[in-house]
View 1 (cartoon, rainbow, N blue to C red):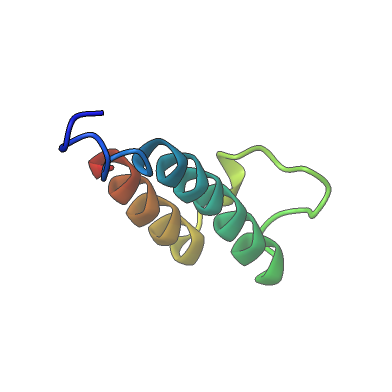
View 2: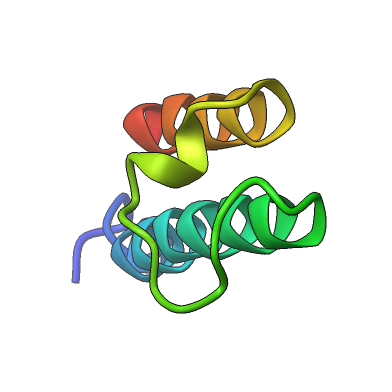
Length: 66
């Protein structure tokens, strides 16, 4: 391996974990605040009201940087 590749091998795993966490945290927030039905709502339904919308957007912006 080249010297610059050794430290970057965590990025694909970090991207998958962070993006999954964005979906899960926005779902948990929406269900806790009773904004969606807990039985598998659409992902777009979990991002329509302010608290979970902001959390989802911020986490996806960080995922875009990764």
